[in-house]
Length: 307
Image (cartoon, rainbow, N blue to C red):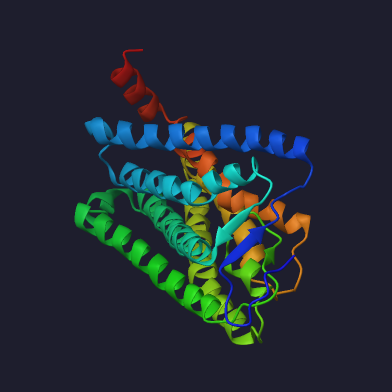
């Protein structure tokens, strides 16, 4: 039932995934395992890259930042979701919902920009290897990271302002497991067209823009790899970039589906499952796909832990 207040709402009720207690316990175990893997995997990457001088390269510098973002990203969503899976009344204050949405958007948008930066790094490494050290200097890498965070913050600010400036009163039930703009817009008590257009415009900037850069980078990488005479060289180049593309498909595919389509007044179970990919799964996948399979990271792990 909604909280009737003609001025503003003080809290929301998140429906989550299911009202069945056994399913909630099962989901709690599954998401707890995912969260622990996310924490361990990303924290391990940060530590290994920090302590091993052989990993002090632009590629691993970006990977360390990606792991930090993934830690922030998953921690914004999963702990609250786990708590709600264990309680009957799944409430979140209006302020708490707003804060969660802001941090989620900053982390998500920054990750979107960073994945594009990483594709550019791989493009330079494969297509312009002789100029790599001059193009990807430490100063340039830091500037690219700052630019990623800045773009994430700006897009987050715009999306948040347009979402929270709408009036919310009456219905306070969110058919979702966390607060994000598409879910809140469905509860707005006024016309949401301007907010939808603002979110769509920001989606074009922070989603389609990076995707275009990634596609450009990998088109050139593929063209270069095809010209490599050595079969071993092709395999190494493809293995370096293939893992990146897997994450790109999961992250951008699910995010574009959610943020780049007309808003409807209902969220179905399929929409919630799709949002799990970009809010939960990719943060767990990144360290295993990008780093923990790499020879250099395995050697750093053996050196650090004596195995």
